[in-house]
Length: 267
Image (tube, rainbow, N blue to C red):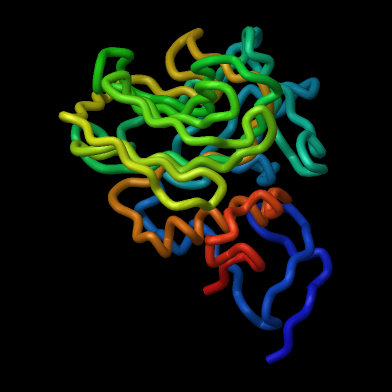
């Protein structure tokens, strides 16, 4: 089997890009995780967006029958070339946020789960979130934030784990939340863990571009977000990093130890 660079490969709802991959190989996507994916917001999937005057009033998840909605004054801007020449929703850090219609299918209580995303931070602004849900009470919130200069953080308000990232700039965080620990991977690196005494996320509101109403408002671009229920193998976590980073044109940032450093994951 020869290796080549297929032109205009469509991957993930409309993003076309070139990459080295074995001819005939099928690309891995989060579809391979099956029912574990309970929320999936993809800016490259134009039919999932309700846009008027360049502003996004609704962003439909590709799974779960849920939507993220924004009131008129809180709508992010859609740009077909918003970041690295690829689609993005642009949040201004002052008024923009989207309320997720239901978190009933998200990992709740002490159940394990992940939040993964591809986002660009325009600067350092502490505790700005790409996605969060649950109460702001201790141990009841799950969020991924821009926390500490050049860092990404998984935070549940009892504990917070931060790793070096490329925020400000592009970064691909994958945060793990369990009753025993917080875990965080950034840009395809290995997971770093922080032991916790518990986790109790209630069935409360979820937000994109914030962690609660009017709090932690994101300043920058968000291109893709996933909420995953249950555990991920290391292999699948590496595939998820590779999928996101190759798809969104930031593969130069992939940790060299990641098995998808030189090519995206395939099935």
